[in-house]
Image (cartoon, rainbow, N blue to C red; front, side):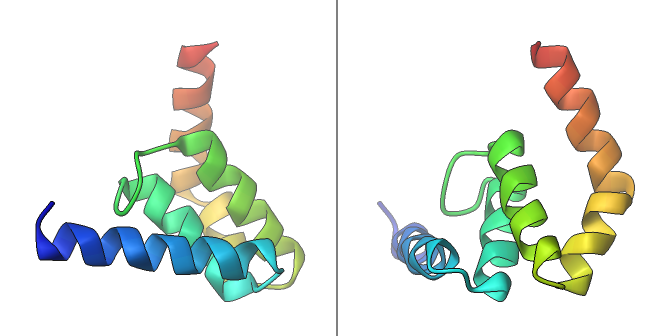
Length: 82
């Protein structure tokens, strides 16, 4: 594992811990990591889960992402897997 990959994985773990404790910014960042597959495998259903959590706490960017083009992409990908 390269140093940059190790740092991404470590950052992902810290974001995950904070997200599970209810930190909206960490939930948003974790969602982005799942969307892009950085620090973890891409997982669109997990991305949507964390975006919803952050948006429910008033995180504006998370709300925007859920309403925007990413939401459409998430829905298409989730439907194609069903």
